[in-house]
Each structure stands twice: as C-alpha cells, then as structure tokens.
Picture (tube, rainbow, N blue to C red):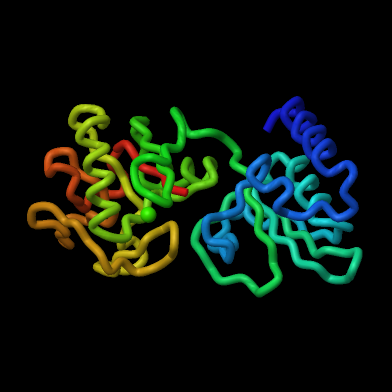
Length: 244
Ligand SMILES: [Ca+2]
C-alpha cells in the first residue's frame, strides 16, 4: 500500500471515528476492512516473513487496525479485549486456511491489491468471485487470491458448481481452464479445499479423473469438459477463480 493511500485511509479512519469514544467495529467494517466471511477465521499456515508480523497492546480496536494500515505487509488483525482500556492486537500478513479462534477475538481483513476486474456477487448467492484470465500456477494463483483478501474458490455443492459453469460458458476465455482451491498435495487422494482447510465431500469430476498416476495433484474447472473438474499438475499455467 502506498504512502498516499495509507494517509488517505488514516484520514478516513479518523473522520469516521473522531467523535466516538470507543469506535465500535461495525462503524467502519465495510468501509476499510472487510471482516472475513467466516468470523472465526484466523490465519493458519502463515507464510514465513509475511505471516505473523507483530503483537502489541493498543487502547482500542481502531488503534490496532490503524497499526495494520501503517504496516506495508499487514493485511489482517486479530484483536482481543484485555481490560476496559487495553486490547491485545496481533498483526498478520498473508495467511491461508481456517482455524477456530477463541471466543471474543475480532478479526479484520484488508486486501493488499484488487483483483483484475471486480469481485462479482451475481454469480452465486452468498459468495463473490474474481475470475482471472491471468495464467498462473496453482500456488501462485492461491497467493494472488490471498492478496485480494480471498482464497481459491471452494465449490461446496452442485448449485455452486452449476452457477459457476453457467457463468464460465458465457464469459470464459476460449479454451481456458480455471484453477479452484482443491488439491491433494498434502496426502494423495485426500482432496482438501485451501480456503476452508476441509476435506471435500462434493465433487464434479469430468471424464476419468482423478487419475493418481500422473502426479496431478491440483484441480481445475476444465474448458474441454464443460468446466467439470480435471486434476492437473500444480505447475500448469491456468486461469483461476478466487472466492471471498
Ligand atoms: Ca464457495
């Protein structure tokens, strides 16, 4: 985040909360910080150097989030009230996965960059997606999604799959397949969603996939199979779908 943007954000923050003794979280969520979709999300498997940045004590939730805005690598805060006037403030950079945090913790999220185009809320109820035609490996795509305050898409059921397919049939780049958040990179044939850390129960495989033999550990919505899923090598350069 550039210095001008940081200053601007600080001014907006100050303006919003100037006359409020204890600026409640709902006052500025949505203006600056998007609270994670899962309010109990806390960064897990944090990436070294940009993961857990600092732990400090602040006098309010707002002060903690201001510290985050000032820090070039901070994208997330986790705040817990200690006393009437003190808050434990954890600053985080990029992290992935979902883990249950303790009750009383507040989690805030600020994207580091914007997806090309916009996050679309009209594809499937309750979710927003960034469909990127930029071709990246699965891991690089996951990093990009994290920078957008998202993860690679988690497709929970047939209704979400059908809605994404309908969108791609009309809007995808010709012959482009799109990575989603599913892989068995940790353990062969145990398919885990990167966004939630959960083992998949719904699948929409196309053809004879998945095929264990070819070191195909990452999953894509395949253009040549009407966007049913193919397992591919994680190094394949493909489009990708982020969800938040
Ligand atoms: Ca989803």
